[in-house]
Amino acid sequence: ETGVTQTPRHLVMGMTNKKSLKCEQHLGHNAMYWYKQSAKKPLELMFVYNFKEQTENNSVPSRFSPECPNSSHLFLHLHTLQPEDSALYLCASSKVGSGDTQYFGPGTRLTVL
Amino acid sequence: AQSVTQLDSQVPVFEEAPVELRCNYSSSVSVYLFWYVQYPNQGLQLLLKYLSGSTLVKGINGFEAEFNKSQTSFHLRKPSVHISDTAEYFCAVSDQGNQGGKLIFGQGTELSVKP
Image (tube, rainbow over all chains, first blue to last red; front, side):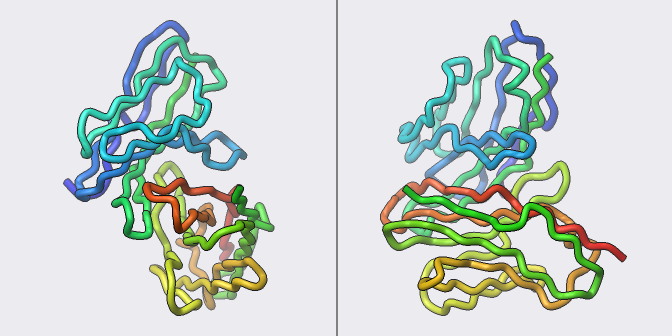
């Protein structure tokens, strides 16, 4: 498998559920990112991890909890979400210092009921 | 702080016509510039990027863009579009000095190619 993969591709959850999104990169990169893409709004950077350390948290509510166990894997743990959290969640990776070109996964389409 | 403005939210064009998607940025430091394309229900795919060197950058699918530092622009062009180019296009900028780099995206331009 190549590139950046994300699972699941679609997720429907209730407001009281707990679920996790998974991202895996097969590019040998050392930085990983979570973005939120809502309809008619620019992409919003949520979290950045460089060499497994979180370097950016863009004022994201605590109901979103990221985890980066190694440079190839990134998770986004979700709990007690709100309907306005429904969006496409995109993962990306890059190699630090090489123009930081980010490569994106296909996204997880999340619907919160 | 950096910002990116894509001047057109929607661009309708006929097949085989030329197209230009406009992007302006603001930054107090030197930047890298990117164009991404997003097809329906997919993630973002890199079209092209400017890191340094020649200001005319060629990308995939016949697209090119020109970096104009004095006008702080990075417009995307294609001389003849196809139906398959219908997608949303995003311009993005990152700070050259920002290792592990934060990308700032524009609002996107929806290109609609009609037969």
